[in-house]
Every structure is written in structure tokens, then in C-alpha cells.
Length: 406
Image (cartoon, rainbow, N blue to C red; front, side):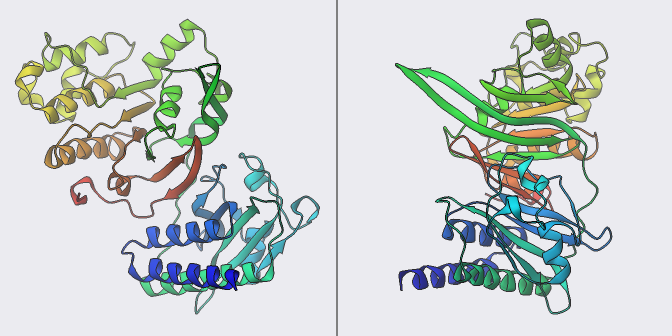
């Protein structure tokens, strides 16, 4: 009886998600989260079929493995078989199941043992599948749990059909940076405090990725490791295939100068230098910088180039800090709560500049923020919880900065 009530409650919550949430992306990701939590599972994914390529790609996934850039051919592996046949599958022992392709999750931080995979059937055809992986207590999935997943998939497929979702997952992106099984420990009393507990994440070229999470979850520590401002305890960090897990001082200096641009909550401008001079100072540190005046122009501050920080508003100072980040022409720009000290109007101005440098200047931006509204702009949204990657969602239709409201 308790199980029936739990499953009925989950079904009702899923119906509320799919019927009441304005964003289809949010409705689908919320429904998957309900299923994963109700079944006490380690991971889950919603795979959608791109009819142009006949390949499946995960729109949203939960758990420690980052499979964002993985695609599966329709008809191959469990995901492809379920989508091709339109029939559900329960896997009791993945290691001995001939249908199972262990490369999807297993090469990305999760050993798959058991699984439920059900098709997304709309009125016309199969448009993808829903996949749930590994019960946390090690037990097997049963028929009732399979039926709950099938109900969720049926409701999701109907909603997708009604809203007319056009699936175009685009081309696979080129990987810029990879964190593999990254841990970070700090001394604490007589022991150690483990802040990161096995982070697996790819960052792609020319993407805007937003990292969300509560204070203390490890999101800023993760970004500091990527930026060379902190060192990992274990695991690997690679940038364009080069291992930066344990760089020498010389390698670290070169890495920070040539690869990384920083935007912080505090603007960190030199008060005795003008906006232009602040940018020029950073430009002189690298071999092939952008012209400092051009960088100032790209953030819309040419008219204030000769003003000192004390003569500018907070938003203008933050735009100078963005110009200072892009003048190096870095591979990756890291932004830590860049709008936290700004009011709404000024925040939108700053976010519009960040949007422009991603979409029109080919930059890659990784932003840590508490503001969930900003996540609507992102190509991907990464949630960190308790030192692990909790979920990753692709935004099929990122909004413009000027459309955000909070």
C-alpha cells in the first residue's frame, strides 16, 4: 500500500510538472528528477532522437557521469534498441547483457549495473527514451517501477507532441576542458574535508555553461581548479588534451595567462588607472592580445575609456572587468557570481555583454551563480550538490539576457 501511494504521488507530481511548467525543458527535467528520486536511483537520462541524423542525444541527465556530448545510433545499445522497437527494457545485470553498450555511462564516471529504459511514444512514432540507472541500495528494479517509468514517458511524449517540440540537437561540440574523477580535500582539524567527491565534466568550445548549487556545494572550488587558482587532490584536468592536473609554476603561469580570463563578483580594478589603462595592463601580459581600445568598445564603454573606476557605476566597472578578460583572447572565461553585487537593470546589461562574447565572438564562458534565472541563457546547466555533479541539462532554446526576469 505504501508503494502504491508513493507511485501515485510521483505520477501526480509528474502530471503537474508537464501540465503547469511553461518551459518544456524544465518540465521534462523535473519529471525525470521525480522518477530518479522516487526510485532511489543513481542516475537517469532523457534521450531524444534527432530525425536528421537518426541518432539519440541526452537532453537532460542526472548523476555523476557527464554524457552531454555522447550520441547513440538509433537501434544500437539499450537506448537505441528501445527507441527503434518502441518496447521497454529492464536490465538486471548490465555486465552480462549482450544488448548493453557500456561506453555510454561507464566511460564517464558511472558503472552501470541495472537499468530501466522505456520509449517516448507519441501518437505517430518513437521520439526517444527515458533511462533510469542503478538503485542506490543495489536492489533490482521490478515491474511496478517499470510501469511508473512507462507512465512518466507516456505523459512526457504526449506533452512533447502537444507543444510541437522540434528536436534539433545540433552538431557535437569540440571539448575544450575535461575534469575526470576530480576530488578536492582540505585539512580540517585532525582530518580532511572532502569538498569535491569525483567530478566528471566536459566544457565545450563556444558554449555558455552555467553552474548552479547551494553555498558550500563545491561549485566555486571546481571553477577555481579549472582556472588554475586551486589544485585538485586526485583525478585529472585536461585542456585541449594537455594534462594540467599538477602543473609546474611555469606551466601554471602560462596557463593562466594564455588560456583563462577571469570575471569576479568584485571588480578588482586598479583605482589609479583609467578603464583603458586597466585593460592595457592585462594586454601587456600576453603575446597576442586584442587591442585594448577594441576590448573596451566590445563592452560598450568607449565613451568612458578615460574614466577611473571611481567615476563609473558598478555595472560599468564590471564591463571593464569583462573587457580585461577578453583582451587576452583566452580559450575559456570563468565568471564567479558576476552580477551578485548589481541591481536587476545593471545585471541585464552585464549579461548581455557576456551573451555577445559567446554568440558573436566565439568565446567559451563558464559561470557560477546562485541565480537560477540566469541559467535560462545557458547552452547547458550543471547542478552541483554535495561535491558531485547532480544533473546536466541542455537548453534547446536559450533565452536572451534581456528576456530574463527576477
